Image 1 (cartoon, helix red, strand yellow):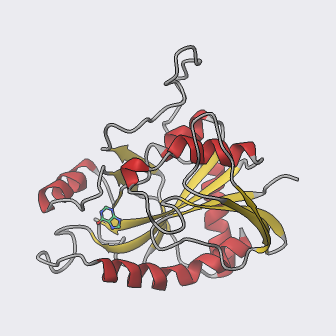
Image 2: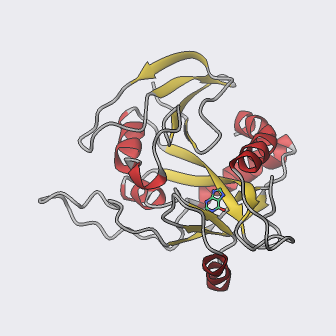
Length: 246
Ligand code: HPA
């Protein structure tokens, strides 16, 4: 049976509460094991898969995630559409804490991560088109689902993917703002690029947890994990209605 949607959960999102009749898969891919089990069940009557990107106990830092195994596992289970939930910091005005956004662009500042399926000797060399890093049709479906459900989602924005796991300096965020980034997170890449190499439809629903360093009204604000988790929990209220509608 096909999977109509795969959801990858980020920081603060370790399960889909409404998933019914859950089957647990522990796939092993040619790239190794994914971050944890893939839970497949019915969500609003449709078959949905869920994978916690950092592991269900949040044991994997962003640079240690096996992004290739995660996406290969979802594809092998029959998923074609992937919605990535990414906890992020907000840089520009429209992207304050607790906002949900569906970005349409990204800039990759990560380094040293295996970022392609062309790594192994003998694998086909792919130069996939990545002008629109998120699948436009899936973005439109996400935005339409949000509108139907009455959930506010900012349409568009540029996601800057940083290496982490530390947060950024104020100068780094100022530079990212100059580059045109609206959001900053640590896991958007190589995930989006790998999804494109696999031919998966992929969109990001970004959950703004905090103002990025120096970006908010209080430039000296210190970002605490508790603020991040509180804001994610608050913003997550909109996610189940959006997913049901999607
Ligand atoms: N920077 C990078 N990643 C993040 C942030 C941030 O400020 N907040 C949540 N994820």
